[in-house]
Amino acid sequence: MKLEKIFELTGHSASVYALEKGLSGDELFSGSGDKIVTAWDSEKQSNINFTIKTNSPAISLKHIEKHNLLLIGLFNGNLHAIDTRDKKEVKFLPYHKEGIFHIEYDEAGDRIFLLSGDGTVSIWNSDFKLIKAIALATDKIRSMSIHKELNIAAFATGDGVIKIMKLSTFEVTHEIPAHDKVNVVKFHPEKKVLISGGKDAFLKFWNMEQDYQNILSIPAHNWAIYGIEFSSDNNHFVTCSRDKTIKLWDAKTLDILERIDYKSHRGHTHSVNCIYWPEGKDYFISGSDDKKIIGWKITN
Image 1 (cartoon, rainbow, N blue to C red):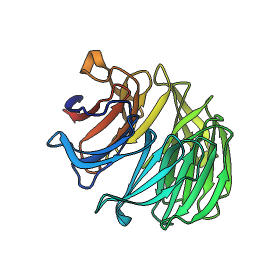
Image 2 (cartoon, one colour; image 1 turned 60 degrees about the horizontal axis):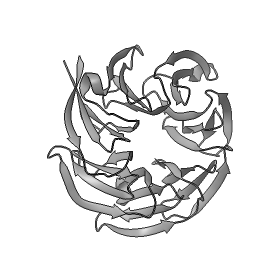
Image 3 (cartoon, rainbow, N blue to C red; image 1 turned 120 degrees about the vertical axis):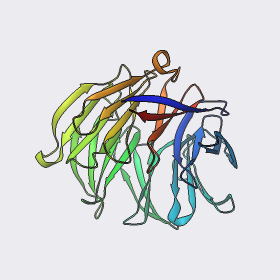
Image 4 (cartoon, rainbow, N blue to C red; image 1 turned 60 degrees about the vertical axis):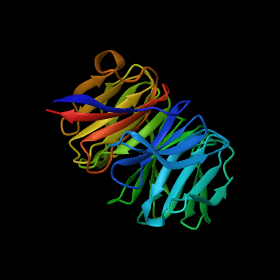
């Protein structure tokens, strides 16, 4: 098994910070420091006529197909909601005063979560009425993962603590000292395990059945870990880092399978900021400070 570079998309003039599912299976959205959000056809390897200009770097994206919405989180704390059918803005939300680093949609509750650099999480209904704002940290909140079956969420905070929240009551049930700064969290889709990645470059695994006891810590990268994404079949996951590399892991054994960098795979030359694994596809896509978007396919 190996990873093969299958396409490279260029067009952004600054760092690529966010990748998100597009309007069809072969399409994706990207957000960049050049204050542009655009759409791509990965099969044709070209731009699609869907471009949004913003007044601040676009650092997070969420496509909510149910409501035909593309949400764009900006570095200045503003949120733009775009109707994907007519490509027009339907809501401008200048609520947060610092960057929106992550946007999550709780499908069961039809709620939108905005995670901010001001240490708060704001929760909105699909009509953009504020439900609740919660101060979770004194530092940035960069990532959130929802466990649908248990109706809970994990939050990655810059305070170095993972917060576990009941989504039915918004009660924080666990506070887990994890890293110097927690950058990303992800619930394992098949194991009762929560995975976290930190500024300390460690990948850590937490047993949900044993009060989130740490069961494994791996010095996975040389710099901060920014992303964790699982494959559609749940057999693999990938991590990306400021150290310019991507790593492919076995989701069953948690063993590392391959390391991707510029020398070995003509990968990225700068920090890899984001990863997107399209549903039902055997490839994933990475975005970087080198302004490139690269597609990677698993081959035997």
